[in-house]
Image 1 (cartoon, rainbow, N blue to C red):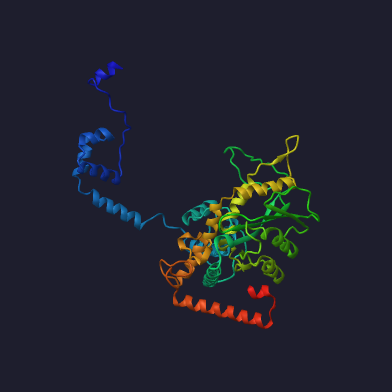
Image 2 (tube, one colour):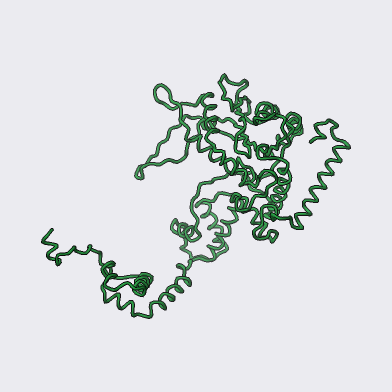
Length: 469
């Protein structure tokens, strides 16, 4: 070691650097900028390993800036190789966008079939083939990748302007309704279908393995229904678990935050809805069950029945606000922000095993314990954010558009594209006052409410409960 130091003049040797033979224009300009800022050529040469003569030539070269502009123009003018079949590519991407707007799944097989149809009207070479390479380059060109479907449902057969107008009218009526209620009196209920064996379709595994095995109990289609109720102040009301295919409730010890029922169909019907009001919604808080509240739920036919709404009105002095059809993905808190967390917990819940170590179907008691644990894992802050991201706030507060979920912002942007919304506007209007269109909409809502009150007085129920509602 001492001999090496003596050979280098008694000091320490410079670190060994890999020799480079070419540098980009951007790198050259960076080194020139350091030299112009005061760094010496000798010091920069020791740091970078570049010859001092080369650094000096770069510093004295005045054509570097012009070469940078030329290179930038070349890149902007020709971003990539031009397509071989522009006519075919244009027809194919137009068809692809049309299919995805209808929420129809597109595969490579359907793309090949569409290419065969397009060949009849598009001049193509005789030896053209829709090969894997062509499809790969086409998808790469338009930034298309294979993705997992995150939401499944029927596509709304309505124009974007109609959906935007319907959403705005609902948010306006929602704002007028919530003006009478605090956060602890605004609720959302939704039925969630769960399975006895909620397994994952993917897992981490070694890359070179041909087979990826998973454990299954054969009960993927055995399901039950959970009716969850969340409050805008962050707490969860008592849940209802409906077991399918049973005439009687199984002998289980239900947790305090769960009510258990049995049904042949396993879904909510009129009798179960009335029992939900008696056993769950009445026990929704530490206050009296007759405290006036607002229950928000979807447009399921059962939720609009007069029998159910009247029972909710008489027993709980509460009213129901029904969401517009096909809008629950962005207007219902449980669907927009909490359903995925619920499913993730069930998929990762600890399973039950037999004495020999085989995984078995969960018992009814184990299902109830899983539901209770899943309810306890949902954070109160997440519930508050779920209500706020759907535009639901207490005391008539207007939620800024930046706090809404992405789907709701997209729907409102359709209204913005039609020129009906100003920049910086909130969900329903400006914070200081409403616009002329919104004042007309408010007047029309008030007129409809007055007409409904007159109809109730003329031919409606004369009971004190209906008059108070």
